[in-house]
Length: 176
Image 1 (tube, rainbow, N blue to C red):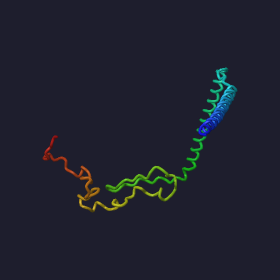
Image 2 (image 1 turned 120 degrees about the horizontal axis):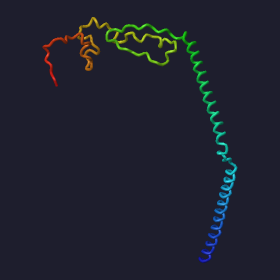
Image 3 (image 1 turned 135 degrees about the horizontal axis):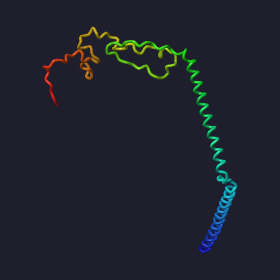
Image 4 (image 1 turned 120 degrees about the vertical axis):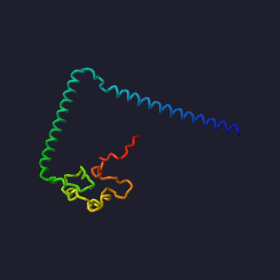
């Protein structure tokens, strides 16, 4: 009985193996057909590029020259349009305000380079006016306190050398 089971199992394996072999052969045939079809398709492609090289070069040159001309004309048209837009927009721009003199030790704020063409309150305001600590009149303070950041670690020690007497020769000169 064991021998019969072994024989039966061997027969089943042979049948299974034959079925697998047939499937592999069919897949290989399909791959081969696909490859021959691709080869036939590539044969239809025209690869005669070098037949009239001079004529093709002249045609290419003419196409490039016309493309460059069109690009140049488009650029010139665009420049002309922007010039016209600038001329039209000249009357809409806010006139420049005269420069105002800043106070002693007043900070400078740059008004920025972007969005200056919009006529809005925030863009028109005067950036040279004093703000914060700069509003205070420092001339009424003692001379020692008339410096930026008085009492702080990184403040300048003097406001200017014109306030100091540098003509005295009694100061010893130390050479390092």
